[in-house]
Image (tube, rainbow, N blue to C red):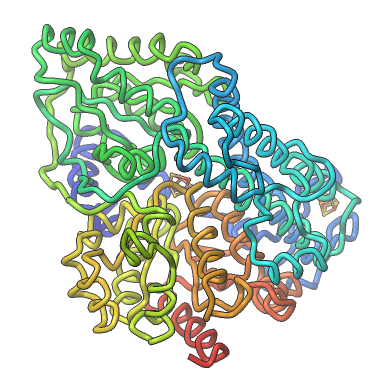
Length: 625
Ligand code: BF8
Ligand code: SF4
């Protein structure tokens, strides 16, 4: 494996070299050894029953059918629907975890969490028509809990955040029959419909994909974001650091990796507890150094300025520093290989969520009602490992500073100021052409492509062409490492965007948090429509999205909710459909003809950028701007 061909992240290159010297293996090595199955990559096989598995030929897709007679369109659509169901389940279950804690807060049953941001509580409540005037925090919060629970459990009707959708877009969804009732119902229905012998009409299956995906974007993910802001505070821009150089040789280093902010927030409290600090000092450490990775990290980077050690593909390499005394994980994007890798370097590796265990890994269960039990145990073991580090420490020196922690609310404040906080200035700058459009660049890193490379090149090309970029997830960490989240990165932007950035003092690339925070992009788009001048549907906006290095089913679900919402969304790496088939045409053309967004696919960063720019220009032309 040539580390320089595998990634553009300098720290990761350095650690891949060290890992190779130590005989340790990462996803990069395993990807090189594991040839992806071409039939599977294009979603041309079905194993939904035991008359199969059935494999069709993606080069001649209509030459065969499955044993039951299923065509390529049925097979690919059914496979796709299960990806949407799984991805949507991940986000909505994450939101459910937040809702569980919120319920306990509202009922006064929990001491580790509270309502920190009452302003946001009232705003969210108001946005879904809960009466707030003259009412107490407890009353509003109780009503909000009851309403938000419907996002999951409701069997008939519309989920609460449909009230935020621009009326014309909602009308289209109602006509198409894709307004989500409740996430549990939609996910259950996909699992039923994709069972052998149920829904075999690819168009009908794609409708249920949209309905389920919308229950994620405007449902589970939005609940997760809003409750996070209410309980932990809304992010506000702050200078914060990204990269492995934030590990400290003379401190106890603890990495939290995963998704739900509950564990991380508790770790932040525990790592500044004087008792724990005393214990660390007694072991000869100068302190306890907490760092994030992946989405957990992206959330606290924006909320609290906790440094971030790297994105998905760096989670194994970072252990090769030998400096990570403990890594604690909760759910999602946790590679099984982390356990093996931590054993190589003596890192104490802990799973903490009963839903996500790894064979052979230590499990210290995190109980929201008694957070200290878990967090103190992790800290104790990390200190023990620090006292007696079994390997030599090698910390890459690179530290990248940037401005992190934007939100939909802050964008309006930033552009409009305290007194006229609104989206008018953003819309005006789009209408007058200084900003050509807005692009959401999000998602994972994937060892099938060079880590970070596509994210960075693509974003540079977009800003050069005056497209303002908003980011979440692992993509945002790639750009932070490339230094594009600093206001002075505005020099890389085209004249118009540069002028706006310099006037406001903002970077041309704006970080919004974790993958569930993609819901912030939806809320911002809805606000752009509401503000006026850019059409009356989400699909009228000069915006586009992409996940150029995606790897997870969650990304597929996110893509589908953006497409269903009206956004052109381009994916890279591989796409789970066969070009030229009816199913593929529906995703890539048909949905747009029906008034939704559409999917796109390209692997080269400049191709992706120009597909997005062309689309933005098409929308501008339609608006007459
Ligand atoms: O939800 S971007 S690799 S960490 S899936 Fe995972 Fe992808 Fe990263 Fe977060 Ni999102
Ligand atoms: Fe084959 Fe049909 Fe069974 Fe799928 S459902 S495995 S295509 S027989």
